[in-house]
Length: 196
Image (tube, rainbow, N blue to C red; front, side, top):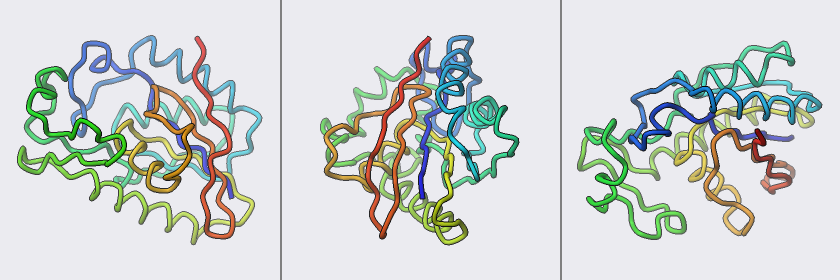
């Protein structure tokens, strides 16, 4: 089984450095170009199933990616971004000053927005692992599955599934991480970056 995990393209909020978790901002012109490029890179992959976060930026990304694959994505709220609570829509530099995330969160995955009416990253990762397990259970061994999601949540998921691969880094907008799943083990095969 193969998974293609893709982060949504750049949004207007990304461009002006506003925190966006469950609040939403559409893809920018640059974001659409990024996703169109990734769509070209993925056109030779046979995609059997597709899942997306129901947030607009992910849905728009999935629709562009799937134009030449003749399948519709399944919306799964378990692939939503971390809910940053009352800090959503605030400048990311101001949010960083609150030290909600540990300085080494990309190693420890310590990110807890519950004091601000949001979520803890570990809870988000657990929801995504449940979703991935459901997909595995309902799929064939040779299926290729597209999952469109978000930066923090997808990074946390992939860091949990593939903890020891030094190639894994925070996903750029429209980046694809291709992962093989065999004998209950996930292994990173390919990283595709949008070129535009």
